[in-house]
Amino acid sequence: MHELCAKATLADLFLLTSERFAHRGAVRFRRDGRWTEYSFRELRERVFASFHALRYIGLAKGDHIAILSENRPEWFIADLAIQCLGCASVPLYATLKTDQIQYIIQQSEAKLIFVENREQLGKIRHCLNELPNLKKLVVLDPFGVELDEKVISFQEFHYLGKELLKKGESDVLESVQSIQPEDLASLVYTSGTTGHPKGVMLTHLNFMSDIMSLKRVFELSEEDIILGILPLSHVLERCGAYYTAFLASGSMYVFTESLETVARDMTEVKPTFIVAVPRLFEKIYLRIIDSVKSGSGVKKALFNWALQVGRAYYLEHRASPPGFVLQQQFRLANQLVFSKLHQRFGGRIRYFVSGGASLEPRIAQFFASVGIKIMEGYGLTETSPVNTVNHDKAVRLGSVGKPIDCVQIKLAEDGEILIKGPNVTRGYYRKPEETQELFDDEGWLKTGDIGRIDEDGFLWIIDRKKEIIVTSGGKNIAPQPIESMLTSNPFISHAMLVGDHRNFIAALIVPDFETLSNWCRKNGLGDLDMEQMIKHEDVYNKIQSEIQETIAGLPRYEQAKKFILLSNPWTIEGGELTPTMKLKRRVILRKFSSHIESLYRPDIRQR
Image 1: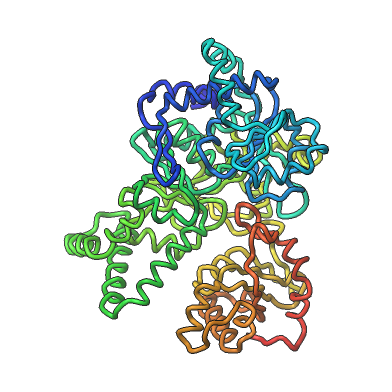
Image 2: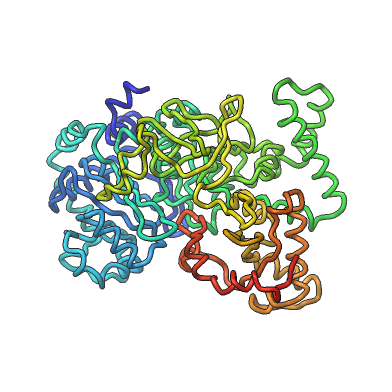
């Protein structure tokens, strides 16, 4: 593996795969309500044209090029052309605000940016005078955009490249051969829970180390179909689905139209491989449970029986084959219940991969019991990103798996997880002090996560080192596992524990207003708006009982003594969540400081 990693780059992979599978489907996407497909040969021609256009504009090896767009095939084309030219891509989340975009473009010294549409262009246009390094802005969907010498359409950009491409493709091949594994492939900016994001420098070697390890773990091939759900700016989607499954394995990549169409797209596309974050699985789980609860008594009984059979079949008999009776019971449970659930995902899923945050163990066990594999792993942007993963030959629910074969892991004295390997970044771009703080004296990357390694080598994540709450009574409390328990409840959308240096734990709760609104109507409260709901005594009591039931098994000092309901959902746009849907704790603490203070006054109702 290491010999291959030492020689290959992302550009090498693209040339190899696009030649080997030239006539096979590469990407599929919806345009004007219909599925459209590019073969690997068509994709290669478009990438080569973009390569020539970039070079004509004046881009050269070592330059940085940004991409500000939702997922679409042009994202692939832009990124692959960037890699073939020996430049570094700078992916930007489409949800970022103007000041964040401006900072990243300036800090990364990007010389060109691919912009999705008029809306995204609007975020940049008024600050163009502050971005003198930008040579061009290439708009992927120019509808309604006023073009000029600096702002050009992707169609014009592509036509320019096609004309240049007629001279031959040898320039591309020569460029790819000049790229070294240690060359920078991408600057990936951390979402940043506070302050400005940092540009993580990831080389071809960093990515290739993860790619080759993951390819062996999941045994992906050209027969697999990927449904892309996470933004390609998310390094997990980029490495796991795009680079490993698509670029290294030749699997077809299907772009889902939007988050709202995921359910439809799964049934139409029938994917075999999906990378997602835990929130997706939580929502699917809650929908299934809600459907069962609203069904007849017979339906509930049948589902619960099937679930018990599935749990025994998949979980309790992992070490030894199930007996004849259990096999027959499982066959019937699969026919009556599980097969219908599988059809919701297209009926061909081999793997769901979960990362980016902790998957609540109860949800992992549920999916395992119905025969749907969710392979949970652990990674960081700074490690390209994967370090550990569960897979068919080594799985332990609740853990994040064993280290992949290019990664070394050990625990510091305080339990902090330390990482070494060829997948580890060389640091943060133009931030030497932060880079120095990232590593210990022996060169191990300090993750900031607290974990434990069990007797069989599986890694378990306990919490973030800097996010542990220490009460005034000296109790150390890891908030994330408790918050995950709370948000697994269908009535709770977001939850954050507070109580550092206080004498008890409290919670900020954002209800799931869709679930809560349905409950209000069923219980005779009528159609209430969000503000009315959180102020209603019956609603407060309902959430209180749901919280009590959800965390009943925790030690008393880990249970929130008080809570307060918030009327507005937490969003990326609102600033409470990062683009990877993690809580911006310091932002929330500052934004809701008065609410938090009120929790520690005696006039707030206690649980």
